Length: 136
Image (tube, rainbow, N blue to C red; front, side, top):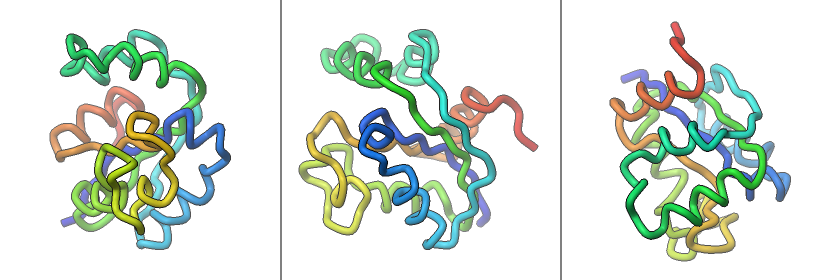
C-alpha cells in the first residue's frame, strides 16, 4: 500500500553533514521525497510534536537538543513507507541500533539519535500536517 510518512533529520545529522547520505538511503530503497525543508523548530512546535512526552524526565534535554540547530523535515512516499522507514531508521537508542540502520550506522549516543520517523499512519498524517500543512 502506498503511504506517506514524515521524517526529520535532527540537529546532529545536520551539523555532521549527513543530510545527503540519509536522503540517499531512502531514495536507494525506492522511496520518493515529495517535499523537504530546512527549518528551526520553535518551542511551541517542539511541544506540539512531542506532546506525549511533556511530563517525562527526558523531555527537557530532548527539547533543548531539538532546539539546538536546524532540522530537515521531509515527506517520504512509497510502499508501506511507515513500517519500512521505521526499520531503516533503527531503534530509538542509537547505541543499541543494528548495523545497517541509519541510527546503527551514524548515531553517536542514545539520546542524540539523528532522525525522527512517524510511528504509525495516524501519527504520520498528524505530523505531516504539523510540519507542512495540508498536502494533496
